[in-house]
Length: 408
Image 1 (cartoon, rainbow, N blue to C red):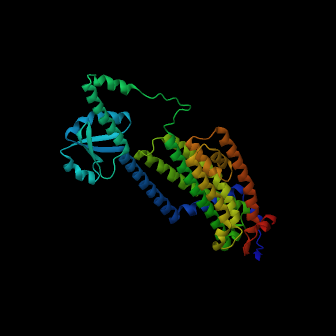
Image 2: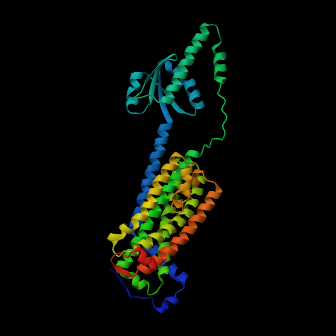
Image 3: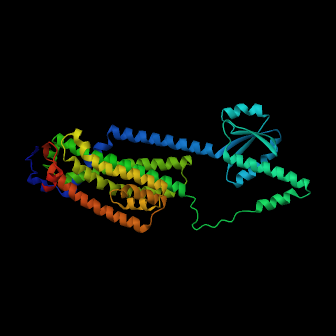
Protein backbone atom coordinates (compact mmCIF):
# COMPACT_ATOMS: atom_id res chain seq x y z
CA UNK A 1 0.00 0.00 0.00
CA UNK A 2 1.20 3.51 -0.76
CA UNK A 3 1.58 5.75 2.27
CA UNK A 4 -0.09 9.15 1.92
CA UNK A 5 1.98 11.91 3.46
CA UNK A 6 0.12 14.40 5.62
CA UNK A 7 2.38 17.31 4.69
CA UNK A 8 0.27 20.19 3.44
CA UNK A 9 1.42 23.47 1.96
CA UNK A 10 1.14 26.12 4.67
CA UNK A 11 -0.70 29.34 4.32
CA UNK A 12 2.38 31.28 3.25
CA UNK A 13 2.30 29.49 -0.12
CA UNK A 14 -0.21 32.12 -1.16
CA UNK A 15 2.37 34.78 -0.45
CA UNK A 16 4.42 33.60 -3.45
CA UNK A 17 2.92 34.76 -6.69
CA UNK A 18 2.25 31.95 -9.18
CA UNK A 19 4.51 33.37 -11.90
CA UNK A 20 7.28 34.02 -9.37
CA UNK A 21 7.05 30.48 -8.06
CA UNK A 22 7.15 28.98 -11.56
CA UNK A 23 10.09 31.22 -12.52
CA UNK A 24 12.10 30.27 -9.43
CA UNK A 25 11.57 26.55 -9.96
CA UNK A 26 12.40 26.84 -13.68
CA UNK A 27 15.51 28.89 -12.91
CA UNK A 28 16.63 26.28 -10.40
CA UNK A 29 16.29 23.48 -12.96
CA UNK A 30 17.94 25.53 -15.69
CA UNK A 31 20.95 26.54 -13.61
CA UNK A 32 21.41 23.06 -12.19
CA UNK A 33 21.21 21.16 -15.49
CA UNK A 34 23.19 23.56 -17.66
CA UNK A 35 26.15 23.37 -15.27
CA UNK A 36 26.28 19.60 -15.09
CA UNK A 37 29.23 17.82 -16.69
CA UNK A 38 26.87 15.44 -18.45
CA UNK A 39 25.23 18.33 -20.37
CA UNK A 40 28.54 19.93 -21.36
CA UNK A 41 30.30 16.67 -22.26
CA UNK A 42 27.21 15.24 -24.01
CA UNK A 43 26.78 18.35 -26.15
CA UNK A 44 30.49 18.45 -27.00
CA UNK A 45 30.50 14.77 -27.99
CA UNK A 46 27.46 15.23 -30.25
CA UNK A 47 29.11 18.26 -31.88
CA UNK A 48 32.30 16.28 -32.52
CA UNK A 49 30.34 13.40 -34.02
CA UNK A 50 28.36 15.84 -36.16
CA UNK A 51 31.53 17.57 -37.36
CA UNK A 52 33.15 14.24 -38.22
CA UNK A 53 30.05 13.09 -40.09
CA UNK A 54 29.83 16.32 -42.13
CA UNK A 55 33.54 16.19 -43.00
CA UNK A 56 33.13 12.57 -44.06
CA UNK A 57 30.11 13.44 -46.19
CA UNK A 58 31.95 16.35 -47.82
CA UNK A 59 34.91 14.09 -48.59
CA UNK A 60 32.69 11.30 -49.92
CA UNK A 61 30.64 13.67 -52.09
CA UNK A 62 33.83 15.17 -53.49
CA UNK A 63 35.37 11.78 -54.18
CA UNK A 64 32.16 10.38 -55.67
CA UNK A 65 31.56 13.32 -58.00
CA UNK A 66 35.12 13.71 -59.29
CA UNK A 67 36.76 11.10 -61.50
CA UNK A 68 40.51 11.07 -62.20
CA UNK A 69 41.33 9.51 -65.59
CA UNK A 70 44.76 8.84 -67.08
CA UNK A 71 45.25 8.94 -70.87
CA UNK A 72 48.08 6.94 -72.45
CA UNK A 73 49.34 6.92 -76.03
CA UNK A 74 46.75 7.52 -78.76
CA UNK A 75 44.01 7.86 -76.14
CA UNK A 76 45.26 11.42 -75.53
CA UNK A 77 43.27 12.33 -78.61
CA UNK A 78 39.95 11.75 -76.87
CA UNK A 79 40.65 14.30 -74.12
CA UNK A 80 38.64 17.10 -75.75
CA UNK A 81 35.50 15.05 -76.59
CA UNK A 82 35.65 13.32 -73.20
CA UNK A 83 35.69 16.64 -71.34
CA UNK A 84 32.99 18.12 -73.57
CA UNK A 85 30.58 15.23 -73.17
CA UNK A 86 31.24 14.99 -69.42
CA UNK A 87 30.49 18.70 -69.00
CA UNK A 88 27.31 18.33 -71.04
CA UNK A 89 26.12 15.54 -68.73
CA UNK A 90 27.16 17.39 -65.55
CA UNK A 91 30.03 15.06 -64.67
CA UNK A 92 33.36 16.14 -63.21
CA UNK A 93 36.20 14.35 -64.99
CA UNK A 94 39.86 15.31 -64.64
CA UNK A 95 42.28 13.94 -67.25
CA UNK A 96 46.02 13.35 -66.82
CA UNK A 97 48.60 12.41 -69.42
CA UNK A 98 50.54 9.25 -68.45
CA UNK A 99 53.55 7.75 -70.19
CA UNK A 100 52.14 4.22 -70.35
CA UNK A 101 49.53 1.91 -68.87
CA UNK A 102 52.15 -0.02 -66.90
CA UNK A 103 53.61 3.17 -65.47
CA UNK A 104 50.17 4.25 -64.24
CA UNK A 105 49.12 0.83 -62.88
CA UNK A 106 50.32 1.68 -59.37
CA UNK A 107 48.28 4.91 -59.38
CA UNK A 108 45.16 2.89 -60.20
CA UNK A 109 45.92 0.38 -57.46
CA UNK A 110 46.32 3.03 -54.74
CA UNK A 111 43.30 5.03 -55.87
CA UNK A 112 45.05 8.09 -57.31
CA UNK A 113 43.49 7.33 -60.70
CA UNK A 114 40.03 5.86 -61.28
CA UNK A 115 40.99 4.55 -64.72
CA UNK A 116 43.75 4.55 -67.33
CA UNK A 117 42.63 4.67 -70.98
CA UNK A 118 44.77 3.56 -73.88
CA UNK A 119 44.36 2.59 -77.54
CA UNK A 120 42.83 4.43 -80.45
CA UNK A 121 39.49 6.23 -80.30
CA UNK A 122 37.79 3.38 -82.14
CA UNK A 123 39.35 0.69 -79.94
CA UNK A 124 39.71 2.03 -76.39
CA UNK A 125 41.23 -0.07 -73.62
CA UNK A 126 40.51 0.77 -69.96
CA UNK A 127 42.41 -0.34 -66.85
CA UNK A 128 40.55 -0.05 -63.53
CA UNK A 129 41.10 -1.42 -60.04
CA UNK A 130 37.90 -3.46 -59.72
CA UNK A 131 35.08 -2.13 -61.93
CA UNK A 132 34.55 0.70 -64.38
CA UNK A 133 32.21 3.50 -63.32
CA UNK A 134 28.98 3.08 -65.29
CA UNK A 135 28.71 6.75 -66.28
CA UNK A 136 32.33 6.82 -67.47
CA UNK A 137 31.75 3.62 -69.43
CA UNK A 138 28.78 5.17 -71.21
CA UNK A 139 30.88 8.21 -72.14
CA UNK A 140 33.73 6.09 -73.48
CA UNK A 141 31.36 3.85 -75.45
CA UNK A 142 29.79 6.94 -77.00
CA UNK A 143 33.19 8.35 -78.01
CA UNK A 144 34.32 5.03 -79.45
CA UNK A 145 31.07 4.59 -81.41
CA UNK A 146 31.36 8.10 -82.81
CA UNK A 147 34.92 7.36 -83.95
CA UNK A 148 33.79 4.20 -85.75
CA UNK A 149 30.82 6.00 -87.28
CA UNK A 150 33.05 8.85 -88.50
CA UNK A 151 35.40 6.37 -90.16
CA UNK A 152 32.55 4.56 -91.91
CA UNK A 153 30.99 7.82 -93.09
CA UNK A 154 34.33 8.98 -94.46
CA UNK A 155 34.67 5.70 -96.37
CA UNK A 156 31.21 6.25 -97.85
CA UNK A 157 32.18 9.74 -98.97
CA UNK A 158 29.86 11.50 -96.52
CA UNK A 159 30.93 14.44 -94.38
CA UNK A 160 31.23 12.91 -90.87
CA UNK A 161 31.14 16.28 -89.06
CA UNK A 162 27.83 17.26 -90.64
CA UNK A 163 26.20 13.89 -89.93
CA UNK A 164 27.41 13.78 -86.31
CA UNK A 165 26.22 17.35 -85.82
CA UNK A 166 22.75 16.42 -87.05
CA UNK A 167 22.73 13.27 -84.89
CA UNK A 168 23.78 15.28 -81.81
CA UNK A 169 21.02 17.81 -82.43
CA UNK A 170 18.35 15.11 -82.19
CA UNK A 171 16.99 15.27 -78.64
CA UNK A 172 14.02 13.74 -76.83
CA UNK A 173 11.25 16.26 -76.12
CA UNK A 174 10.09 15.99 -72.51
CA UNK A 175 6.90 17.55 -71.10
CA UNK A 176 6.49 17.59 -67.31
CA UNK A 177 3.27 18.05 -65.38
CA UNK A 178 5.11 19.48 -62.40
CA UNK A 179 8.47 21.27 -62.59
CA UNK A 180 11.38 19.44 -60.99
CA UNK A 181 12.52 20.82 -57.66
CA UNK A 182 16.35 20.86 -57.71
CA UNK A 183 16.33 21.46 -53.95
CA UNK A 184 14.19 18.42 -53.13
CA UNK A 185 17.08 16.19 -52.03
CA UNK A 186 18.53 18.74 -49.61
CA UNK A 187 15.08 19.66 -48.31
CA UNK A 188 14.37 16.03 -47.55
CA UNK A 189 17.75 15.63 -45.81
CA UNK A 190 17.10 18.72 -43.68
CA UNK A 191 13.63 17.41 -42.81
CA UNK A 192 14.92 13.99 -41.74
CA UNK A 193 17.67 15.55 -39.62
CA UNK A 194 15.11 17.81 -37.93
CA UNK A 195 12.83 14.82 -37.23
CA UNK A 196 15.72 12.95 -35.59
CA UNK A 197 16.87 15.93 -33.49
CA UNK A 198 13.35 16.65 -32.23
CA UNK A 199 12.71 13.01 -31.41
CA UNK A 200 15.95 12.71 -29.43
CA UNK A 201 15.42 16.01 -27.58
CA UNK A 202 11.81 15.31 -26.62
CA UNK A 203 12.36 11.75 -25.44
CA UNK A 204 15.63 12.57 -23.62
CA UNK A 205 14.48 15.62 -21.72
CA UNK A 206 10.97 14.25 -21.22
CA UNK A 207 12.51 11.25 -19.46
CA UNK A 208 14.64 13.63 -17.36
CA UNK A 209 11.44 15.27 -16.12
CA UNK A 210 10.15 11.90 -14.88
CA UNK A 211 13.49 11.06 -13.27
CA UNK A 212 13.63 14.47 -11.59
CA UNK A 213 10.14 14.03 -10.14
CA UNK A 214 11.03 10.60 -8.73
CA UNK A 215 14.34 11.89 -7.38
CA UNK A 216 12.65 14.69 -5.44
CA UNK A 217 9.94 12.35 -4.26
CA UNK A 218 12.38 9.67 -3.07
CA UNK A 219 14.58 12.18 -1.22
CA UNK A 220 11.49 13.90 0.29
CA UNK A 221 12.71 17.20 -1.15
CA UNK A 222 9.31 17.61 -2.78
CA UNK A 223 7.72 17.93 0.67
CA UNK A 224 9.98 20.89 1.46
CA UNK A 225 9.30 22.48 -1.92
CA UNK A 226 5.55 22.05 -1.59
CA UNK A 227 5.66 23.85 1.75
CA UNK A 228 6.46 26.98 -0.27
CA UNK A 229 4.88 26.48 -3.70
CA UNK A 230 1.79 24.76 -4.96
CA UNK A 231 2.04 21.43 -6.85
CA UNK A 232 1.20 22.94 -10.23
CA UNK A 233 3.81 25.67 -9.70
CA UNK A 234 6.44 22.98 -9.10
CA UNK A 235 5.29 20.87 -12.05
CA UNK A 236 5.16 23.75 -14.51
CA UNK A 237 8.46 25.21 -13.31
CA UNK A 238 10.22 21.86 -13.67
CA UNK A 239 8.82 21.33 -17.17
CA UNK A 240 9.78 24.85 -18.29
CA UNK A 241 13.26 24.63 -16.77
CA UNK A 242 14.15 21.30 -18.36
CA UNK A 243 12.47 22.40 -21.58
CA UNK A 244 14.79 25.39 -21.76
CA UNK A 245 17.78 23.12 -21.16
CA UNK A 246 16.73 20.94 -24.07
CA UNK A 247 16.01 24.01 -26.18
CA UNK A 248 19.49 25.36 -25.44
CA UNK A 249 21.12 22.13 -26.55
CA UNK A 250 18.91 21.96 -29.65
CA UNK A 251 19.88 25.52 -30.61
CA UNK A 252 23.58 24.76 -30.10
CA UNK A 253 23.43 21.59 -32.20
CA UNK A 254 21.24 23.06 -34.96
CA UNK A 255 23.24 26.29 -35.19
CA UNK A 256 26.62 24.59 -35.18
CA UNK A 257 25.38 21.95 -37.62
CA UNK A 258 24.11 24.65 -40.00
CA UNK A 259 27.43 26.50 -39.92
CA UNK A 260 29.51 23.34 -40.40
CA UNK A 261 27.25 21.97 -43.16
CA UNK A 262 27.44 25.26 -45.07
CA UNK A 263 31.22 25.53 -44.57
CA UNK A 264 31.87 21.98 -45.84
CA UNK A 265 29.58 22.42 -48.84
CA UNK A 266 27.27 19.57 -47.79
CA UNK A 267 24.43 22.08 -47.44
CA UNK A 268 23.75 24.97 -49.80
CA UNK A 269 20.17 25.79 -48.78
CA UNK A 270 21.02 27.80 -45.67
CA UNK A 271 17.72 29.72 -45.92
CA UNK A 272 15.69 26.51 -45.96
CA UNK A 273 17.74 25.15 -43.06
CA UNK A 274 17.20 28.31 -41.02
CA UNK A 275 13.45 28.14 -41.67
CA UNK A 276 13.49 24.47 -40.62
CA UNK A 277 15.26 25.41 -37.37
CA UNK A 278 12.66 28.08 -36.56
CA UNK A 279 9.78 25.70 -37.24
CA UNK A 280 11.64 23.03 -35.27
CA UNK A 281 11.87 25.29 -32.23
CA UNK A 282 8.13 25.89 -32.27
CA UNK A 283 7.35 22.20 -32.57
CA UNK A 284 9.94 21.34 -29.96
CA UNK A 285 8.15 23.57 -27.44
CA UNK A 286 4.77 22.05 -28.28
CA UNK A 287 6.13 18.50 -28.26
CA UNK A 288 8.14 18.91 -25.09
CA UNK A 289 5.25 20.42 -23.11
CA UNK A 290 3.01 17.64 -24.39
CA UNK A 291 5.29 14.77 -23.42
CA UNK A 292 7.03 16.34 -20.41
CA UNK A 293 3.75 16.84 -18.55
CA UNK A 294 2.81 13.22 -19.27
CA UNK A 295 6.24 12.02 -18.11
CA UNK A 296 5.95 14.15 -14.95
CA UNK A 297 2.54 12.70 -14.12
CA UNK A 298 3.81 9.18 -14.79
CA UNK A 299 6.91 9.76 -12.65
CA UNK A 300 4.83 10.92 -9.69
CA UNK A 301 3.21 7.47 -9.52
CA UNK A 302 6.42 5.78 -8.28
CA UNK A 303 8.93 6.46 -5.51
CA UNK A 304 12.05 4.68 -6.78
CA UNK A 305 14.27 5.31 -9.80
CA UNK A 306 14.14 1.56 -10.52
CA UNK A 307 10.42 1.86 -11.20
CA UNK A 308 10.60 4.86 -13.56
CA UNK A 309 10.90 2.80 -16.74
CA UNK A 310 7.78 0.82 -15.94
CA UNK A 311 5.63 3.96 -15.99
CA UNK A 312 7.33 5.92 -18.80
CA UNK A 313 7.77 3.02 -21.25
CA UNK A 314 4.15 3.10 -22.54
CA UNK A 315 4.54 6.82 -23.26
CA UNK A 316 7.96 6.36 -24.85
CA UNK A 317 6.72 3.52 -27.04
CA UNK A 318 4.08 5.77 -28.62
CA UNK A 319 6.76 8.25 -29.58
CA UNK A 320 9.28 5.58 -30.68
CA UNK A 321 6.82 3.66 -32.87
CA UNK A 322 5.46 6.86 -34.37
CA UNK A 323 9.01 8.05 -35.08
CA UNK A 324 10.10 4.82 -36.78
CA UNK A 325 6.94 4.40 -38.86
CA UNK A 326 6.73 8.10 -39.73
CA UNK A 327 10.42 8.29 -40.68
CA UNK A 328 10.08 5.31 -43.03
CA UNK A 329 6.99 6.81 -44.63
CA UNK A 330 8.74 10.15 -45.09
CA UNK A 331 11.66 8.48 -46.83
CA UNK A 332 9.43 6.37 -49.10
CA UNK A 333 6.63 8.84 -49.83
CA UNK A 334 6.74 12.23 -48.04
CA UNK A 335 3.53 13.33 -49.78
CA UNK A 336 1.65 10.07 -49.21
CA UNK A 337 -1.60 9.71 -47.28
CA UNK A 338 0.03 7.68 -44.50
CA UNK A 339 2.62 10.38 -43.85
CA UNK A 340 -0.04 13.10 -43.86
CA UNK A 341 -2.30 11.22 -41.43
CA UNK A 342 0.48 10.40 -38.95
CA UNK A 343 1.80 13.96 -38.98
CA UNK A 344 -1.67 15.26 -38.04
CA UNK A 345 -1.93 13.07 -34.91
CA UNK A 346 -1.09 15.38 -31.96
CA UNK A 347 1.21 12.87 -30.22
CA UNK A 348 3.28 12.54 -33.42
CA UNK A 349 2.93 16.01 -34.98
CA UNK A 350 5.84 17.56 -33.01
CA UNK A 351 8.24 15.05 -34.58
CA UNK A 352 6.85 14.52 -38.10
CA UNK A 353 5.26 17.84 -39.06
CA UNK A 354 8.49 19.94 -38.95
CA UNK A 355 10.16 17.30 -41.12
CA UNK A 356 7.39 17.59 -43.71
CA UNK A 357 7.58 21.39 -43.54
CA UNK A 358 11.33 21.32 -44.23
CA UNK A 359 10.80 18.86 -47.10
CA UNK A 360 8.28 21.27 -48.62
CA UNK A 361 5.50 18.67 -48.82
CA UNK A 362 2.83 20.19 -46.54
CA UNK A 363 0.00 22.65 -47.13
CA UNK A 364 -0.53 25.71 -44.96
CA UNK A 365 -3.90 24.53 -43.64
CA UNK A 366 -2.31 21.26 -42.48
CA UNK A 367 0.24 23.19 -40.42
CA UNK A 368 -2.48 25.37 -38.86
CA UNK A 369 -4.75 22.42 -38.02
CA UNK A 370 -1.91 20.35 -36.56
CA UNK A 371 -0.76 23.27 -34.37
CA UNK A 372 -4.30 23.79 -33.04
CA UNK A 373 -4.82 20.07 -32.39
CA UNK A 374 -1.45 19.73 -30.67
CA UNK A 375 -2.01 22.85 -28.54
CA UNK A 376 -5.42 21.52 -27.47
CA UNK A 377 -3.86 18.16 -26.62
CA UNK A 378 -1.13 19.91 -24.61
CA UNK A 379 -3.80 21.72 -22.59
CA UNK A 380 -5.73 18.47 -21.99
CA UNK A 381 -2.72 16.42 -20.88
CA UNK A 382 -1.35 19.28 -18.79
CA UNK A 383 -4.61 19.32 -16.85
CA UNK A 384 -4.73 15.52 -16.49
CA UNK A 385 -1.04 15.20 -15.60
CA UNK A 386 -1.29 18.09 -13.16
CA UNK A 387 -4.12 16.32 -11.39
CA UNK A 388 -2.17 13.06 -11.24
CA UNK A 389 0.95 14.86 -10.03
CA UNK A 390 -0.93 16.77 -7.32
CA UNK A 391 -2.59 13.64 -5.97
CA UNK A 392 0.37 11.25 -6.22
CA UNK A 393 3.58 13.21 -5.63
CA UNK A 394 3.27 13.13 -1.81
CA UNK A 395 2.45 9.42 -1.68
CA UNK A 396 5.46 7.25 -0.92
CA UNK A 397 5.88 3.51 -0.84
CA UNK A 398 4.41 1.27 -3.54
CA UNK A 399 3.33 2.47 -6.95
CA UNK A 400 0.18 4.60 -7.00
CA UNK A 401 -2.51 3.40 -9.37
CA UNK A 402 -3.36 5.84 -12.13
CA UNK A 403 -7.07 5.54 -11.38
CA UNK A 404 -6.45 6.44 -7.72
CA UNK A 405 -4.34 9.43 -8.71
CA UNK A 406 -7.03 10.70 -11.08
CA UNK A 407 -9.71 10.31 -8.40
CA UNK A 408 -7.51 11.91 -5.74
